[in-house]
Image (cartoon, rainbow, N blue to C red; front, top):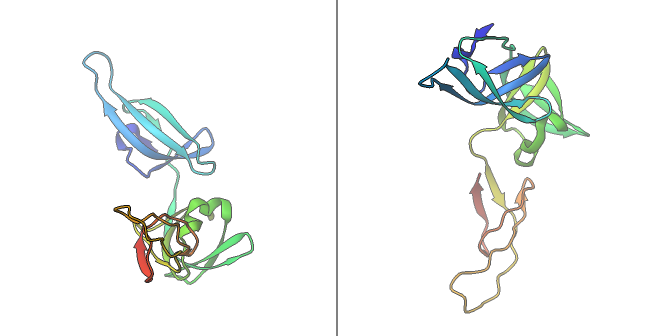
Length: 173
């Protein structure tokens, strides 16, 4: 148990039997009336975001979330296989739990996987990922001052628009 004064970004709360992660919070002390805490909460399983206001000092139930450093190994059908870097245990994480992070996952990349009661909740990617542009279409010579952007195929798979180029380029997210 914690109070609303202990809220911080990333904390996972157990509200009405569901797990909610604190995305934003703001302690408000109006000139008249009691203080309160305005929060933006994200449902860990569904991704739904809601705004919720708590009275200051109210007790809230926090969930025990174990964040483990893991290494992405490979994709096995619908599941992604991760290995704990400390214990070498492997965990199968569904595509729904990995979410948009699947677009930027590279083999042997280290990520943080959050678990609650040994069930994976979400995958936290590093702040930046290095991707390699494998091919771009040749640009046409025009009189325009800047070359027209073309969408290059990246490894792993996301598509971005970039200036035309004939040499391999490394991009960061």
